[in-house]
Amino acid sequence: MIGRFLDRLCDGLRVLLGLLIAALAIPVGMQVLARYTGVIPVFLWTEELATFIFVWAVMIGAMIAVWDGTHFDVRVIPDAKRPFLKLLQDGFVLLMILAFALIFAWYGVEYAEFGYIQNSTMMRANMMITYISVPIAGVLWTVFTGYRLYEAVQTYKNTKKAAA
Image 1 (cartoon, rainbow, N blue to C red):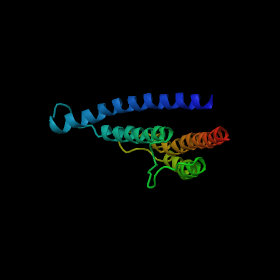
Image 2 (image 1 turned 180 degrees about the vertical axis):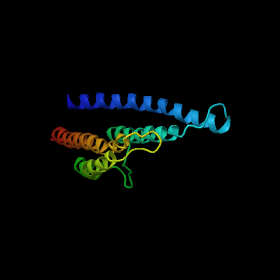
Image 3 (image 1 turned 30 degrees about the horizontal axis):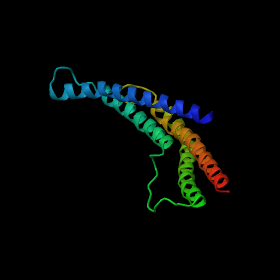
Image 4 (image 1 turned 90 degrees about the vertical axis):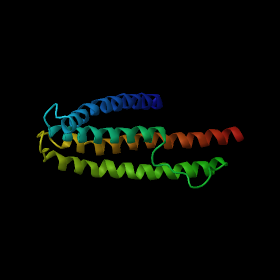
């Protein structure tokens, strides 16, 4: 049940990521038109908006990648054949991801508080809009990785039972 909820959450993140990428085309398109055609005046706020959207797109993409198991995982040794060694191998990777996730979540709060006292130059938007993406990503990475770790342990237990 928790796995289905997290999978639906990740589906929502995918939709949000698609919308952000589509929205990113607007300020970037305005920048290109302004710089190379002169059809519209140069709006400096479009660069800030593109940056804000891009930061969120990167962080949401990283959240999705952690759920899918395609982020932070580089195999330098072959996959283990024995269930316990496979658990150790996968568990090590997941624990390292969890450590970084907790760092992002813990120190991201202070980072977001720092953004709260700043405003962007052109749009006068509060910088917490982008800074808050760091602790949110850290929390979701922690939840996703914790669940993946739970799944790895359950897979090991089920494999052990099947072999007995």
